[in-house]
Every structure is written in structure tokens, then in C-alpha cells.
Length: 218
Length: 299
Image 1 (tube, rainbow over the protein chains, first blue to last red):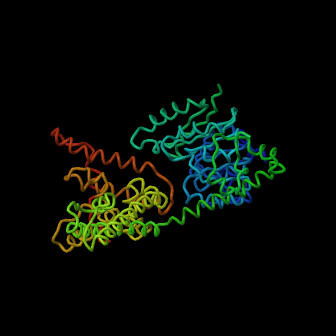
Image 2 (cartoon, one colour):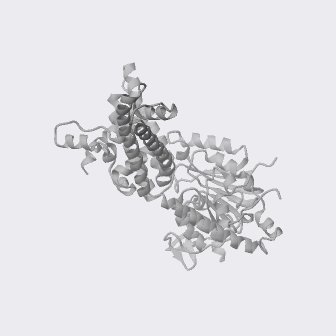
Image 3 (tube, helix red, strand yellow):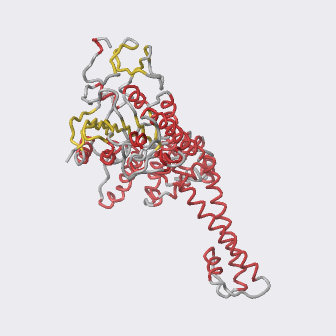
């Protein structure tokens, strides 16, 4: 790693590198969605990935690299492919069969990525597979009750672990003011978590709130 | 052993797909402790192989639940219902000649069998047997309906959520498939199932149909006559979008239902507003720019 690419907020394995003449976030792995590459590094587009945007805007995610991750809402695996590039064992939960087909091809070249076609609202259906005390819970699900999903999945997270949550206002209530939705979500979340940081993801994603939180331990 | 991991059941793939646990445990360590694998590296290798196989199997079975299958099911359902009703009419007519308590419809067929009515005459056996066929057909229709209710949300999750499984299946059937439904403009979706009325209109001796099969949707049927066209147009717009999402991406987008609920509320507020003698606000723009859609049916 050269000194000019070191960024204290980025986990090991994620770097800012010049790709196609622009400095971009990048990880090392098999390309999956036609992203620009530079040698073994592939660009991580923050406007296609909420987690990418969180790193891009400089949120302190606490990610260091090598963690055990539970990822809820993996979709076709765009973001989860980058996560698996820098993290350790990564459990990827997705509910819809069609995107899971793409997720499977992402998983094929990543031996520590475990795709699960499961409903994130029903943790009991994958608690016999996903290990306890994961280091990071990443959630990006487009369903109503996003905070409740995070609360229900708290059981997987180690007491010193982190929740990295992307909240889509339109999934909760299309007609309500996003700020009001975010306040509700934060209030629900605070039953199980202590919120460390909450930031809107504009201009990368409209009406999305990113939350970094740690579990409440009583 | 308090809890059982996926690796402790027979058949890793099936266990990952169908198993469950009340809470997670340190499965990698437990698998090593219980002698299932020599070390954690081997555990993760086995887990990778099993989760990929399980996800592939689940995806494949979801893909077998395709739109062709759904079309056969909904058409078989309609055939069973129609035939049951037709035979029930014949039965009621015939039964009336030998059974003083003869009723009508499928209900009569059921009563006839349940009460084991003592029919007389040489045709008694045949009437009884016919009643059995009617009831069996009706039962098959019910079973097909339950099947459609299960399959439609797998084939077209957004369409089924918005339209209900039965209507979703009928729209796919009328369009000839999910792909061709996804390619239809919303004005066509609005009048699917009203082809006769549409062609009468196009020949120039009738007004344009306001709705086809989507009339069965509560949003249309439950809206007062004057606003049904608007409700049907709004519903068809969302259904067309839902079909496109289902065909092209397969994601679930619950916001579609919320957007439609919001739109319907605005449309229905007109009735209240007129009762109050005032005109409803913010209701002109979105009607105006979809107006041309009602003529999209010829495509």
C-alpha cells in the first residue's frame, strides 16, 4: 500500500485508487458487474452501493477488514461482492430468487461468501446457518419496518459489533416527509442499538439515511 | 446439545433450505468440537459448498414456477368453475323432476350428497352420480384457486401484491405471459378482458371501456361510478409498472402499493369534496397527463 492511498476511515483492503483518471474507491477481486478495473483492483461505485457511499462520504464505519459479516438485502451482490473482497466470512441474505441468481455467480469466485435465499424478517429461518457474534451487521433491505428488521437481527451481532444500516425513506412511507420517517426509524432502532452516527447519503442516493450503531448492552 | 446446526441434519442442502433455529450459536466452533470437520477452514469450505447448492436449488425451483404454469392453472380454474356451474344447472333441472326438495346450483349438488336424499325412479343413480361430479369439479376449482394464491406471488411478486394473486394471474393469462404484459402500455392493461367493448368502441358505436378484468379489484369496484375511470387508470398504471419490475428485475417494491393507496385516496376524496361543495385540491395534474392512455388499447 503506498502512503498516498492510506485513508484512516477505510478498512484494510479498500483503497482510493486512480481508475480511468479519477480517484475511486476500489477492492481486489473478480469483477462482477462490468465495473472499471485497474489490474486486480475494481472500482466500487458509491452511487450503486449504500455502503460504498458511506465510505465515500467519510462515515466512521469502524470496518477494519477481515471481519465476520452478516449482510441483509444482498440483492444481486453488487455491494456484497466488495464486502467479501475485504472482509472475512460473509453471510449474504436475499429474499428474491431472481437477484439471487446473480448473487450466486458473485459467490462462486468468493469462497468465504455464503448466499442464503431467506427472508430477513424471519431470522429463525437462517439462525441454524449464520454464526453468533458476527462483527458487522450490514442491512440494506427495501421493505417496510427496516428498523424492526435490524432489531430482530441484533441477536447475531457481537456485543462490541457494529450495525451499518441504510434506510430508504420511500420503503417506509412514500407520502411522508423523509426526515419524519428517519426520526421514527431512529426511535425504533434505539430500543436495541446506540446510534453513533447518522448521515443522509445525498448526492449518491436520494432520501436515504445511513446509520452507524452499536448494540445496547444491558 | 441445546441447539442443532445445519451440518447436523441429513442432507446439508435440504437442511439449509428448510431448517431453522431459535437463535444462532458459534456454529464453526461447534462443528469442530462435535467432530464434523477437522478445523474452521474446512467448516467454511463445506458451508460455502452447501449454501451455494441450497441457493441454486431454491432459485431453480422458483424459476420452475413460471408464468406458463400460472396461465395453465388460472385457465383450468376458470374451466372447472364454469363447467361445475353448467353441470349444476343441468342437475337442478333434472333433480327437480325426481326430488321434491331440489334446489339450485352447486349448493344443491352438495345438499343432495350430504342428505343422501332418497331419490326414486330409474334415473336416481345417474342424478346422484352427476351431483358427485359437480362437487368434485368445484372442489378442484377451490384447490386450483389455493394453488394460484401460492404461485402468483412467486411468479410476479409485485403484481400479485398490488392486484391480488387471482387478478395477477388473470392479467398474465390475458396478456399471454408476464413478458408481454410487461410490454403493454398501461392503457392496454386497463382494458384487458374488455376486448369486445373496446372493438365496439373502435368501430365507433360505443364509448371507450373504462376497465377490463381489473374491475374485480376492490379499488375499482369500490369507487363510485363517476370516479371509476380514474381509479381504473391509476390502478392500471401501477399494475403495468409492477409487471415490468417483476419481469425485468424481480425485486420487491412495496412502495408501489403505498403510492397507489395514496392516489386512490385522492380520487375517492373527490366524492367527499363534492358533498362539501368544494373542489378537491391537487387532483388535476396527474389525471391530465395520463388521459391519452385510455386509447392505448389498440396496440
